[in-house]
Image (cartoon, rainbow, N blue to C red; front, side, top):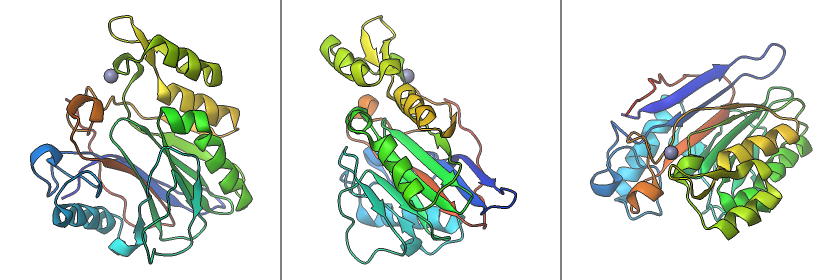
Length: 258
Ligand SMILES: [Zn+2]
C-alpha cells in the first residue's frame, strides 16, 4: 500500500487535465530497516524487490503500468530530460524531466531536497525538478521552466513539496553568504540562531520570478517522521513527487502528522 502525503487532480477548463502529488514514507510500503515504509529510491541500499513493489504501488494508484512511471538519475545538476515514452535503458543524469505525452508519470525522488511539480494545461506539458542547494544555484528551476516553454507551455503552475526547512538546515556562514548572493531569500537562521539556508524559499522565489503560479506544501522532512530525511537519519529512503498529464485515478491522501 502506498501512502500519499497529498494528491490532487486539476481539470483545467479548455486545457488538458493533470494529476500530481507527493508520496509519504510511512506508514505502508514494503521496505524494512532504515528504509522502513514506501522507499522509492533504488540507489540507497534497499532491497530491490521491495523498491520495485513500492514503485508498482505508486503506478497502480495512478492506473498506470510501472513502465510508465519514470525516474531520473539525479546528480544535483540542471540538466533536463525531455521524455516521450517509457524508458528502454537507464536514464542519463538529469535533475528535471518534462513531457507533453499523457499517461507518463514523471517522478522526482527526495529526502530533504526540494521536489517541484509543474504543469501547463495548455497545450498540455508537465515537468518535475529536484532542487537541492547545488541544483538551485546551478539554475535547475529556470532550466525546467524553459524546457516546458520550448514544448509550447503557456501559463505554468507549480507545487513545491515537503523538504528540510530553513530552521533545520544549518550551514557554515560562508555557504549561506555564497548561496544568498544567488538566491537572497534562501538566507535564514536555524532553530538556534546559527546561519542556515531555506532552499525551498529560494525555489519559490525563482519560480515566481520565472512567471510560474506557485503553491507550497507544508512539511519539514527532518521534523516529520512520515517523510524520509537524510539530515535526520543518514541512511534512509526516498519519497517522491509525481505528476502525470491526463485524467485517471487520483490517489487518496490523508495528510500525516507527526
Ligand atoms: Zn525543520
